[in-house]
Length: 183
Image (cartoon, helix red, strand yellow):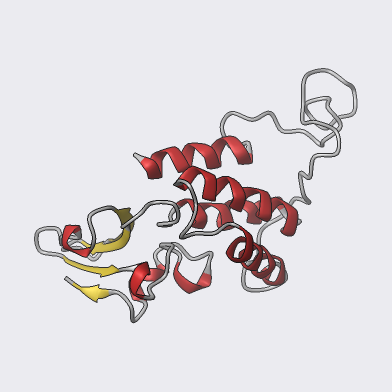
C-alpha cells in the first residue's frame, strides 16, 4: 500500500497523470496563443529529447542521485511518500532533460525508503521473467514462484535501497548484485 501511495505521489508530482503538455507560459499547449490552462510560468519543464543515462545525461543523473542521497534521508523519512516527494524536487532541480526525470523518480518510488523493515525481493518465474519489488516482513517473506527462484537484499545489511540498484536508473539491477541472497 505504501509503495502504491508513493507511486501516486510520483505521478502527481511529475505531472504524468493526465497532464496537459505546456511550455511553462500558462497557455496549455505551447503554441503561444493563450487558449487554455497550462503549466505555471517559470516551471522547469526541461528540454525535450531522449534521455541518455549512460552518456550525455549521466552527470545530471549522478548529481540528482547525490542530492537525493544527501538531502532526502532514506532511512529517516517519515514515510515513503515524503521520501519520493523529496526525490522529485531534487530530480527536477538537478536534471534538465525532462525525459530523464521518470528514470530517476521511478527508482526512488521503487525503493525501501520510508518503509521500516522493507527489503527488495527479486523473483524469476520458470520462464526467466525477472521482477523486483519492495516488500515488508523481511527476507523470509520473499518467496520464489513455482518452478522459479528468488533472492532478497536487505538495505539494513548494506544492500541497495532501490530495485534499480547501484546504477540508479536500470530497473531490476538490484537483482543481479552480490547483496541479493538466494532464498
